[in-house]
Image (cartoon, rainbow, N blue to C red; front, side, top):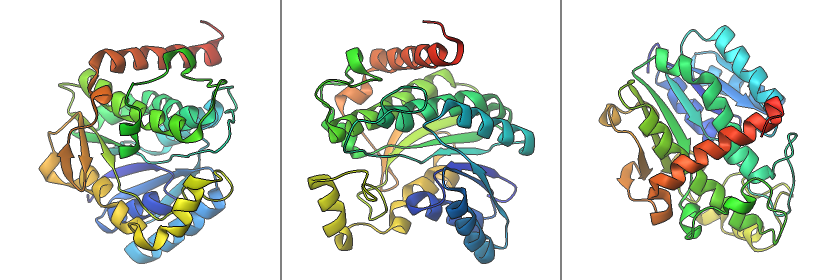
Length: 288
């Protein structure tokens, strides 16, 4: 990874922080995008002290298109190349909330925010080829057996279930990976998604979720993967020569596995892409 530049969303804590740590140790220059800049600065200082390589921190709120655009502009202004774009940040919420742009927050952050960020940085990633895009999804996508709810994809105003919406957002991650890989064929850019495992992090804590999901992560944490263990597949997909030419895949424990049937639906992948572009255009340009 010497001479490579890696951009990681949510690299201030948990799996993202451990991924940033490992890639910095391997010689990469790492840029962390996170909402809590103070926490990001603390993580960056810790990693820099260990690796001897400066880690940059930039403000990024994936619940705000304005913040995403500002972050992308800073990356483009300061980073002449982007060798790895690692879409790591994610949330699960117990109650329905909205992003700054009026979308249901779990879908808006886990999928739509990353979709926009990728579009804004894609030319730089392509210009840096051979390069990689790594998407942290989850085996939770397997719970979305019937696919996405197209009628309420970005709003979910009726019968809201935080866990179901999360599972569908993780399905969206895999479909996005599949369609982006198709669109980037022949460019030298690979795109792969992964399941990090069930990891003891701040995920589902801090009041975002109440009830069984929160209880599970709190009381089962001694038996779950550590953040460093959960980061292994992200690190593998970002750096290993074994996957130099692998694209459009879904990985678990550094092995390619088959996602569920809904995640292998090419029509749904194209539809999600087109709908994502439409939703962003509505908020960005006021057009339907």
